[in-house]
Length: 45
Image (tube, rainbow, N blue to C red; front, side, top):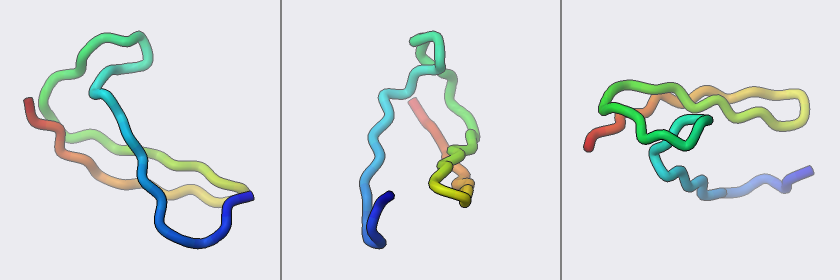
């Protein structure tokens, strides 16, 4: 269980297979406890 506050998430720009992804729009899905949060991301190389 995480306490309320700010958290940083880091990602190296690779897919689940470890391959670099192309520039584009992606969605980050963060699941916690009984909740889910979706954040739209713009990835540019």
